[in-house]
Length: 187
Image 1 (cartoon, rainbow, N blue to C red):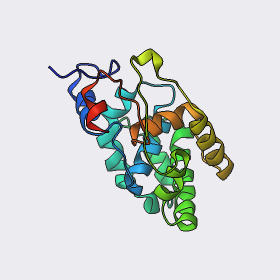
Image 2: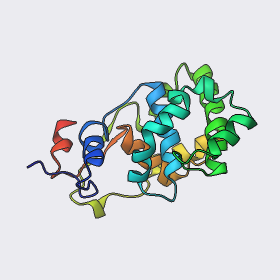
Image 3: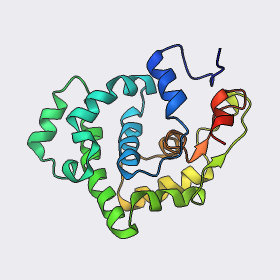
Image 4: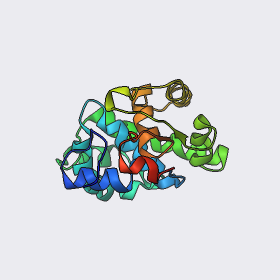
């Protein structure tokens, strides 16, 4: 039996996410944008709630195509807010649209969002060696810096805790505990 991080429950969806995606270094702008939006949507909720809605998010948010989302108007936003398949929080939906516009600005100014966002870990994954879930921090100086920089650019739902969860999700940090089979695999 594989030993996983303590936060990973017996839920198959959670295990698949843990085993194949969480902590894997991603440099793909569309994936980086998707995870930025989903981590913001998660604020105040459990990650499994978002994972269960992810496929529907992909469908109704044009597969996280920032160019398309940046064009959403009030009518599209109103339509999304009626959809029970997503987290129907007006501030979160509006931030998805405004964050898409800002994401595109970063791409235009830095060549890619990946080039911009990875600067916060020195352009490579940071490998941690946490023994237990309790050892893992909610935020770090790097996530504080990322949050501050993104907020300065106008991003919403991007506090330091959300930024750290994002860094974990897209593999900017390897926070699999040392007893988890994925910790060694990702080295």
